[in-house]
Length: 162
Image 1 (tube, one colour):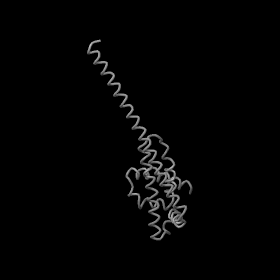
Image 2: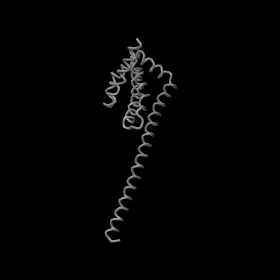
Image 3: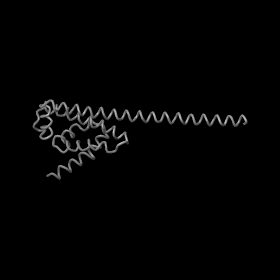
Image 4: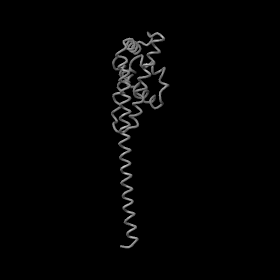
């Protein structure tokens, strides 16, 4: 075996080792990315759970939510402020989940549950009024999603029920 043959053999071994190392790093990055996405979804869902728990434990807050969705014109200024804060928090949580789902191509149906909930809220007079007053404060892509999907379908549901 000549020195050139030996050098070529060593270069092949080094190249294969490098490919193995790159593959290992890529696998670690993929695993870490999935873990981070899963933790983010769990945190966002936990925040919505905390929001729902607060409603369940505070009958006045629950009353304001129900009245605000059904007849927002009946809320006094303080109640309207609480209603807007409550809806703003909920929509912010759903916005975060929507962003995470959009960034992840793992489960295209993961957004479906939240879409149905938003449509239901936006089918109410108070939900539509909240969005018309406060929708400007959300990320542009979320605004487009709400206005092109959730509001349109919510309006279709309302008109089909009449």
